[in-house]
Length: 296
Image (tube, rainbow, N blue to C red; front, side, top):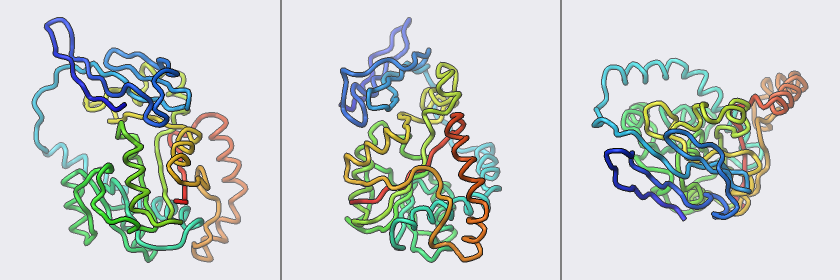
């Protein structure tokens, strides 16, 4: 059961916010154990492999302030790597196109439109949803169709898209099942889904969860705003229970719809890339993992 209840704060105790009483994936509340107890939060580990924020004890926060010159500077710095981000997005879309036909693409949490630009370069018709007003305005200035909406309520008709991408957004909701059901609703049968999320098995998160930034409280100004952490196995089970078939975890070595020069280059370096991927996994050095699934 998804809860968001706040106990009143006293002079000697901070407010206690109950985020979830059950697992976001399987719904279990009995076969769950404490994963890490911090001064500001408690995170639970379910038998299905998910780690999720269970309870928060936030410090009183000062009133929110509007965007400042410092915010604008941060946005500008983020944009400096645009070409690299667009190139990475292009490879991620090609990963999906190994398993589905080209068609309209929806990017959920589209930021400054890197995936939208990559999709357009590949001849696809892109659309996006985003909650950040500055990012929305930037995308619209570039001519992209972007809506102000969150992942749990997508403003689109059923079966409207052939590809959906979710890059570092699924961890930002305590209710991922609702978000993924919305994705399945707007995705064509046979359409492809690309997800990138932080990797729960990253070595720093495993060894030092009490200090690692993964488990800082969402909204405290220091944390990442995350509620749930996944492994490839736990996310695959969640998707398969919702009517998806997981077809690939981690980047493809070859892209069937890439240009001929790119495919030649990929073939030449694929043995090195394969070895590098195996080492990253074995040494728990992946901070994120990619996953491609197809709506059955």
